[in-house]
Image (cartoon, rainbow, N blue to C red; front, side, top):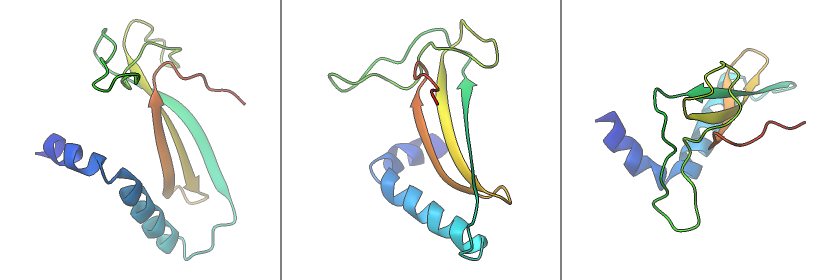
Length: 102
């Protein structure tokens, strides 16, 4: 059921992220003076890159530099910002072959 629900939410992902940010901000008491930001990789027990369903786009599961030394598995890159209390406020998921640059 969760996966079917996620497919329906995908078209509304911007609204879901906005709602998540507002809820997180509310938990912080609207007093956010410091954001902590991190990027990590999440790997799958899969060795094949995602195929694109839309022409000109690539899927998210891709081969790339793995912080977990899982160089054969596919992965996604997750970027997240949290409050100083660790409350998630924002996230973005990138294809697994996206470079983490400063």
